[in-house]
Length: 359
Image 1 (cartoon, rainbow, N blue to C red):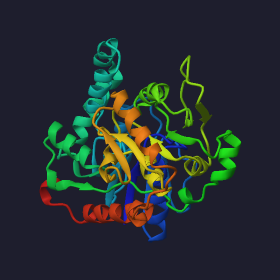
Image 2: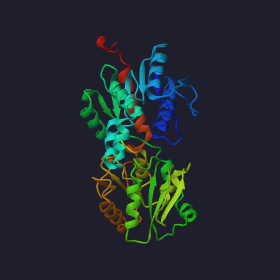
Image 3: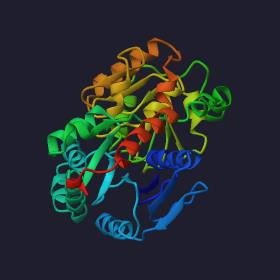
Image 4: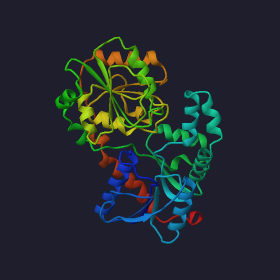
C-alpha cells in the first residue's frame, strides 16, 4: 500500500511521535510505501518518503497538507492531526472542546474569559468539527472508550466507524530499569515509599493536586519523584524530587513504588501503560482514558474527582500499607506490537475501494 501519514510537529518525548515512528518502521518492513507529512521529523526510518509542510498555525498546516495530498494518489491517508480530509483519523489528542471545558472547570475564574476569546482555541474547534464530519473522515481510531463517547456526544460521526486501539509501549524497556542504583542516586532509602509522576503539561496532568496531597500525607517515609518538563512552584514540600526530563525514564519506574497522575483531561496516558509494564500500581483520575485498563485495588485506583485531595491522600496511604509490591499484568496487551497490528487492520480496511458516494 502507498500510505500518507500526517503529524504536524515532532516531540522527542511525545507518545504519538513514538507510536508513529514505530508504525512507519513496521510499514516499511511489511513492504508498504509510507509517506510522512510533517513540519520536520529527525528520526525517519529508512524507506519513508518525507514531505516537509511548513506552517504557522494548525489551520495553515491542514490546508497545506490537503494541497500536497492532491499532487499524488494514496491508497490510504492516515492523520494524527485534526486535518481537512483523511481516510483514517487517530484521535490520540482527544477533543479540544472537552479539554477546554475541563480546564475552565478546574482552573481559575479568569480562564474562561481568555479561552472563549482565543483565536487558537476557536481555530482548533473549527478544525475538530471538520475532522469529525463523515464527509471528510471515513474511520476514526480512539485509544479509549472515553474518547469514543466524547466523539459521539459532540458530533454526528457514525459509531460503527470508530475503532478502539489502545496505546502500546516497548514492554521490555520498562522492565529493564535499575532500581537500586537509581534510588541511591536520588537519595531514597530502602524503607522509603517513592511516588512517581512522569509528564509535561503539569496543569492538565494534575500535578498541582498531587503536590497538595503530598503536603497532607501522614507518613514521613513517602517521597515524590517528578520526571518531566514544567515550571516549579514557588514553594514545594521537602520530600519532592524534581528530576527534569530523562532519556532513561525506565530507571524512574524501577525506582518507584507507586505511579500517581490525576489529570483533568487525558485521552489515554501512555505513562500509565509504561507504569503497568514496569509493574507499578497506578492512581489516576476518571478523566484519564487509561483508567479503563486498571483493575480497582488490584492494579490501581481511579478517583472520580482529580481535585479531591483527601481521596488522593487516602489512596496513596492505602497503597503504601500494601508495601513495595510489583503487580502482574497481561504484558502482550500492553505491547506496541499489538497496537501496530490493530492499527494496520483499520488502515487496510480503509485502503479498500471506497463506495462511489465517498470518492
